[in-house]
Length: 212
Image (cartoon, rainbow, N blue to C red; front, side, top):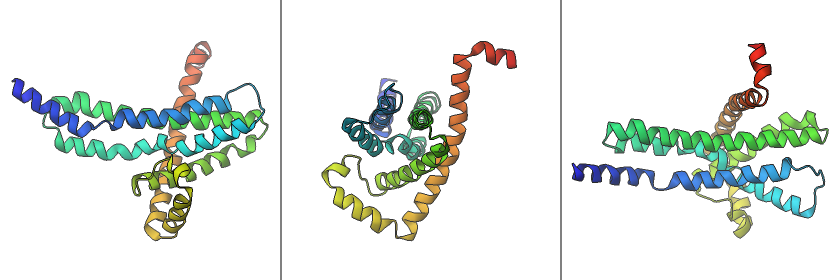
């Protein structure tokens, strides 16, 4: 019995490999920065604000990047020998991590839209969301296929620029980026409605109940 348990734990640890905690940590960085950038009372954009904004953009693709971690789930389904661990621990853990990471992305863009409305630029909200999806689609491609990191923008920006321009002129990377963009756009819209609906439910429970 002990031997079997040890085997299951080793198998689970091998498939888990620590990616959940690390990727959620990376997704939390732009989430925290978005509140500082877009939810503060002051509308003044100081030099520090712009520096933080650049850091925010550099790390933002890490939030929707968790969608690509579905490969860990697929690999785990094939590797975990126990149906109990698979159905009650492994699958719920990985799906929760993916949803949490993408929810961080959704909240970031909701904060961004809120800020634009405060500035009187409501007409740019949709365009800013689409532009963000496009930039994040490129970032996801660079991270998943070329294994580049957000901090590479600081350590080797020239290489990042040349690599991006070179790859996006090729057919396969361009198709991947376009498909990723469409997926991000669709999933964001769905998750945004759910998030705003839950926010309305918790903020104005009496109003929602009266409508129902």
